[in-house]
Image 1 (tube, rainbow, N blue to C red):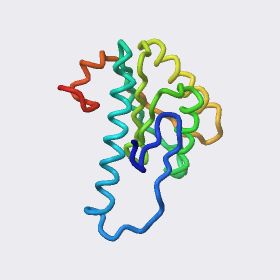
Image 2: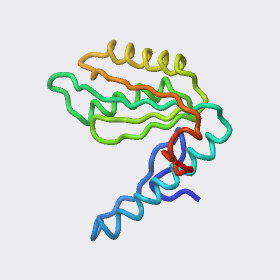
Image 3: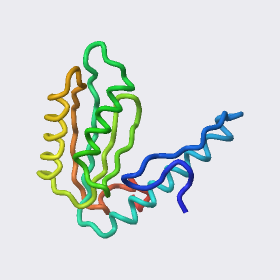
Image 4: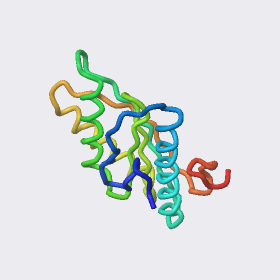
Length: 148
């Protein structure tokens, strides 16, 4: 059963709102459970696929833009171009990783080209830089909890 920090692909995160008393003893186990749930979900779904596409997205804010707004715009635009079975994880205020089981490199390139075009058409929108990789799930080097 998934922990409180992860609700599956294509769904919003619903974290309980409370004030932690000690982040190392209270929040860390909850965050680790969420990461473990995410890892298990990715591993289960990718076992049926012959490839795993991974995109590292760096957000380049427009001059004078708010970092939170830039992240929100990029994640919303990405969600419109990715499939429900794809995952997007924010690594920080200006960095995302997208995991897309079963896609070929040219499919991933065309999706991110569409994301870049959609962002470019928006007023004062952030730009993105994308690094792409496609590997067989067993070549992911233990990235999702499997054997290295």
